[in-house]
Amino acid sequence: MLLRAAWRRAVSAVTAAAGSRPATPSRGLRLRVVDHAPQSAVHSDAAPEAEPVLRPLYMDVQATTPLDPRVLDAMLPYLINFYGNAHSRTHAYGWESEAAMERARQQVASLIGADPREIIFTSGATESNNIAIKELEAAIQPDTSLVSVMTVNNEIGVKQPIAEIGRICSSRKVYFHTDAAQAVGKIPLDVNDMKIDLMSISGHKIYGPKGVGAIYIRRRPRVRVEALQSGGGQERGMRSGTVPTPLVVGLGAACEVAQQEMEYDHERISKLAERLIEKITKSLPDVVMNGDPKHHYPGCINLSFAYVEGESLLMALKDVALSSGSACTSASLEPSYVLRAIGTDEDLAHSSIRFGIGRFTTEEEVDYTAEKCIQHVKRLREMSPLWEMVQDGIDLKSIKWTQH
Amino acid sequence: MAATSRAQVLDLYRAMLRESKHFNAYNYRMYAVRRIRDAFRENKNVKDPVEIQNLVNKAKRDLEIIRRQVHIGQLYSTDKLVIENQEKPRT
Image (tube, rainbow over all chains, first blue to last red; front, side, top):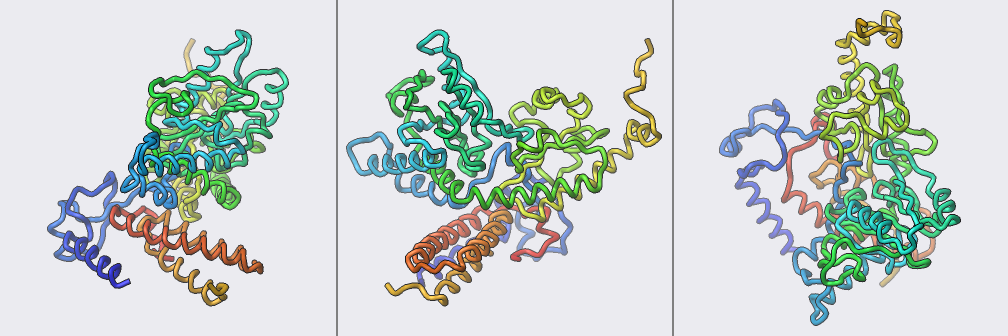
């Protein structure tokens, strides 16, 4: 007790000496400065920009999620003292690392109703997807094929009818793979109930670390896959390479936490989603929610604001971290293929924004986001000649835009 | 070890809330306080002493996690969120 108090005093002495803001360049991107009352003299020695800067709210959980503190806590021992290679068979460092890896494997398996022997660790859902699809090329019978479907879509949040698809594939003897990156730990999944043969899992979508994932590969009946990565034969020969113990421990911890918190999170996220949609649609006309509302994961809300261009709304909402369309394709200017596939009009597809609500999202953040969104949509619409025409009662579809 | 008393559970509850309010990161801080309140409320009518002891033991482990993670967060703190300017911190 005394030791800890002394330690705390020492730590606060160190941080006080450096000023409440460390002299080293502040971590994080400085975007906005807040006017505060003049700081004390201590701070004037610090970096030139001594005024505090505020970070945007994070509403982009489909892109990635923060680590749950419980996950970081589970990982740290393996980054500090328990650094053995899980495949070293001859000493305690290896044995303790292997035990941690197998415990993590059990945690992942338990979340999806699988056997631990059916879980292979990978570098993420993308690698898992590649392994699963390569299976098609390595098929033993030339006429076997594979169905691959996302469980929950990352752009519009739609839930696919996985159990029905599984039943159909099983009856036709076709392999069924699902990319469950956005679904694992958020909605109940059972590989046996849903007749799933292959499943991709991503660590950083479920409050776990980046750079790790897993692929579930059914053992009964056996699904054969070809290894993408060959080498020392780790992970039953399906994925060679030293298994990164700290990362898989994080993935396992994330899965265990998700299993415990699934119901609580789902209920809270559903309420927050309703709140966000209600606030926005109550104050703004001509807002369309993309995606089937009946089969929808509440934490992923994709809205189109007519007569407002999506990118300009995103830039205007600089205090909120949001996205339009999927992060993996965000460099291009083309509207999302998902929106085009569900039949969204071109102009509405260009004005879509995705709001992500997660385990750590608060009611205040939802209210702030809704207010800013309403404020900026109104402002941008005021500036829009299209909006003006609509207000005057002109039907935009009747306009002849070209002169021939 | 004698069974956990109501007073001990309340002490644990208060200790967890107190510690959680020290999270630097807004999202972690709000989550921890909310989750602790909801979890204790949800389990307040549990009667089975074995189950109570299990829950108390888990809570004690979680308190240690919170202590460690609060401290780590303070070592790596960064700027506040836009929303923290307006609302009262440590609610």
